[in-house]
Length: 182
Image (cartoon, rainbow, N blue to C red; front, top):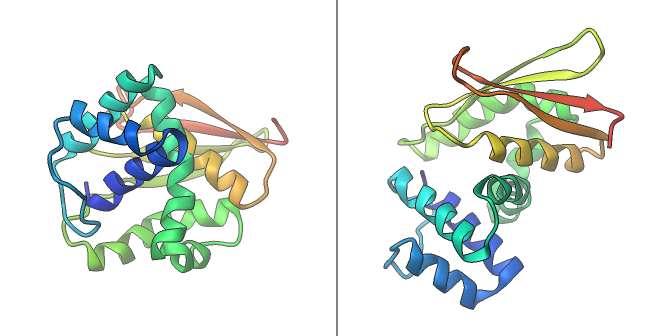
């Protein structure tokens, strides 16, 4: 993953628990580099190790950290120069989800090693939105819950995200956005 992701993990830890906690998390994860470079590609293990170290240090389940990180990612990337790209990707939650793959393709122009996930969706008979998440990276479903929650907030929707199915059988993970639910 690119350093931008690891910098966002750092920002989340520092903004919620302080610089001293971040130093301990980095040490637990075996990170010796003083800073992450946003446009540098790092082994995925670095990010997974940071999440595991944060989970251990903060005594919070990794799933909860990933969910918080997903919500934080929406705010962080907007602050770090991707706000216009987020704004241009849709004026509503559904439009944004429809354009996620196109947005990732635009980002890949400046990040040639990017291995982004892919998303598709369908409306259910009850009017909810079923979202499918395809990724080569295991274990990030709870982050997607947080991302979707962050997007719901960004677009001032009233909805709840349910993590329906993991990847095992279908090759993708499934989430349901239930509109009107809190």
